[in-house]
Image (cartoon, rainbow, N blue to C red; front, side):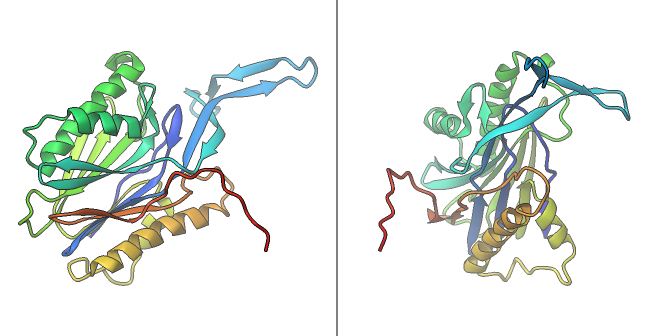
Length: 279
């Protein structure tokens, strides 16, 4: 089964991203790209007087509605979007798409705070997803200074994929897809499948036009890893040729969650100054 949840745009620091979760009998693969896009209101300079004006809203000539416009000003290829959260004697994987900052802090900073302060009585993957969704929803409301100030988004501006097992004896993993908006939402999935969040426009079309269904109940974990990397890499490579700003890029982080373990398949690392020696 293939699930492709809607892509969207949001405000401030945008990490449109593509996150992929694949549930197969031997474990769960969770993966994401690393691109962060920083945007701000468009500034236009008059060629005559050289005065700069900030364009905060644009009137659509078709529907006559005003909408805010943000233009990309810079980017980074080192945003962290895949995380490990400990849950009793096991670990849960989390992949985040959408806003890169909430209430003035990065998603990575929020995940560290949540991991440290989460209720000790959480026992299940769904319970952890519920608490994590509630945490981010509260921070999201604070970011806008109240729920009444949150604008209407076409799609949720922040999303989470939470994956793991309820016990070390569990035979099938769980995936909880969470949406943070004016009203939070959660959707639980327990069958063998692949779930996409973020900008999956390209690979979503690919997966929806398969000649035959992918037998996720028969796929080895290595094939699930390869599939997740293939889908993210295909998105990144395709966007090179599009006439628009890339929404995915940078290193691809991949982790595997099993009933008793969480381990990285590939993960970007912090680096110091690098020198290239000519041979």
